[in-house]
Length: 319
Ligand SMILES: NC(=O)c1ccc[n+]([C@@H]2O[C@H](COP(=O)([O-])OP(=O)(O)OC[C@H]3O[C@@H](n4cnc5c(N)ncnc54)[C@H](OP(=O)(O)O)[C@@H]3O)[C@@H](O)[C@H]2O)c1
Image (cartoon, rainbow, N blue to C red):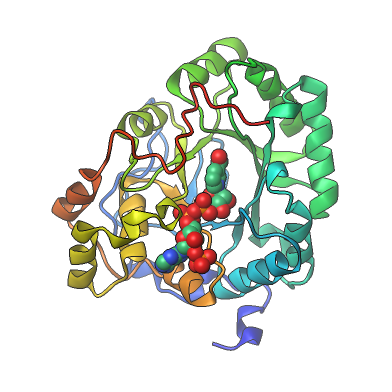
């Protein structure tokens, strides 16, 4: 497909892949009270969050994509068909995200841009100012989603930061507000003290750390789970023998099997790749389906110490 076709305004990935034929068995999202989108055999490219916003199921991770290399890699991802970019103040690449967006002819409303509040700015006023600075760097008028990056429970400012995000949403700086790396106790406290639950919780999730309890908690509370490091940062999971056999059976790569497993768990994914071939591979997940037995085989690979970097949100703090 030529670059021009990909850059036609309003062109979406769904014109590249026939999503209408896509089928996933997962009940991907239902609200706590049982309302919300009914489970459907037609699995959309986007999913509706509990606040009514649509989010692409597959986004593009941008950690470590900085400067000119970062801009080129993100541009390539947008050309390949990604419409969602995941950045953070602490990645120091919001400028590269803005530059990549400026260099495309894509409409702003066709993009979904996420950024994250760092621990050092978890005060009410600071939260608003930090989001405004993120907007200046990305040259955007609003974010589709802004997350508290880590709860930092020892510093204990995350409720105040959440109140800042609620205010930022009222001001129109962000469309949807969410969190990242929040445990059930942190989410319960947000609900108790502000009455507002996040629409999304972005958490570490891959076959060696599949987080069944946190996933269930999120789902029961109408919070969509999005997986960070969905490929385990290319660790040993990409050589896993069980997944390799499933990949062979489907004539797909191990990475594709892992990402498809995550989608079938009802989880969104944001894989990062510097390679256009692997970017394409990571988007191309809708022409096959894993059986329930295959999903369970991968889910059973979960390890008690399966985190990639030993970052336990109960004690880990990042500023
Ligand atoms: N909220 C948080 O606290 C948090 C924490 C970490 C990350 N994140 C977000 O999550 C995103 C994704 O996580 P991540 O970047 O840590 O790790 P990841 O996406 O799980 O893995 C990236 C690694 O996998 C390789 N890779 C990608 N596609 C592949 C494929 N098809 N086959 C083989 N190897 C492949 C990449 O290499 P190549 O580039 O060479 O292809 C890279 O080394 C981040 O970029 C960031 O946006 C959020």
